[in-house]
Amino acid sequence: MHIPDGLLDVKTAVAMGVLSATGLGVALRHVRLHLPAKRVPLLGLSAAFVFAAQMLNFPVLPGVSGHLIGGMLTAALLGPSAAVVVISAVLIVQCFLLADGGVLALGANIFNMALVGSAGGWVVYYLVSRAVKGLFGRVLAATFASWVAVVVAAVACAGALATSGTASWSVLLPMMTGVHMLIGVGEGVITAMVLTFIAKTRPEMWGDAAAAKRSQKPEARSQEMGGGQTVNPTGTERWGAVIVLGLLICVGLALFVGPFACGWDDGLEVTVQQKGVHVSEAAEHLIKVPMPDYKMPGLGDGRVATGVAGAVGTVVVFGLAWVLARSLVRKMKPAVDVGGSE
Image 1 (cartoon, one colour):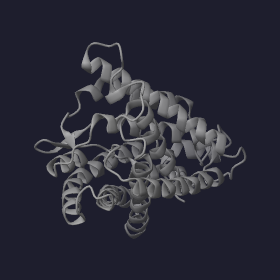
Image 2: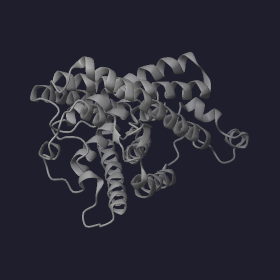
Image 3: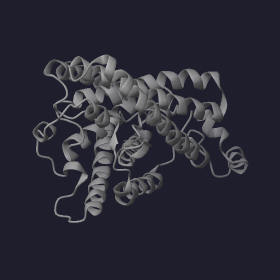
Image 4: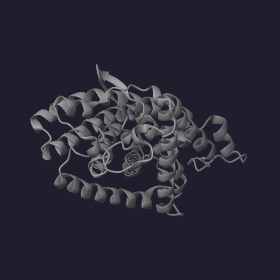
């Protein structure tokens, strides 16, 4: 769903750029005021995972592939404002490091995937998770909300293209929503798998303080009450080992799995091709980037070049998101960590 340059007219690109800058500014302010400082590394790790996972295209129809967007997954863990920051960081790195998404279309891509997708999905997640209680309800809510997030982002993308005159709304809407309804199924499944794994292995990463305390083993709770080693019920332990291991996994996904992902065109590319819209190479690459098309220069083998470029991008986006968050988040934060709740 990354719009390249050449598909949007000037007025649409500028308008969506202004909307994205405003929305991102609001999200950054909310992160600064409400994200606990101890969760900043998780924001960087989320960005690294989303970047690596977006390399892993999966088939949805003959000749058509899709990939994770990750906004709802991040929103479930850290809240919608943090999700906006994470997805925006990923899109910025993809644009200026890999030529994935246009420079002039960056505002539109942030608006569609970071703002509309994350916010739209979060509303659904919030409502469903309160109607269906427990871990099952939260996973169900995140799964359905992930599907919704992909579909509403596709609708926003179709609207931008229609406003620019790329094709008519009556044609773009059914084509974009139809294929992204299928892609959304994959998004929902991936989100459910990741969140279930986190809930079983590191429950303090997902949920409020009470949920983290209930997840402790009985012997840990007895130590806390009996004067032994104190167990922090709010999950304030340092995340060093988790972050290092998680980053290694993300780099491994990009380096060793990314090169073997499905190479078919994604939903937007197929839609544009079927309407006979041609985007010139000059329009697609308005600026010179270090690793165009996920290829590390100087490496002869295509898969090796792709894997190395993906690994470098994963580390870069991790660093960008972490440094950005650390520069914004205040040192003193409330003692209670509400996890993904906002």
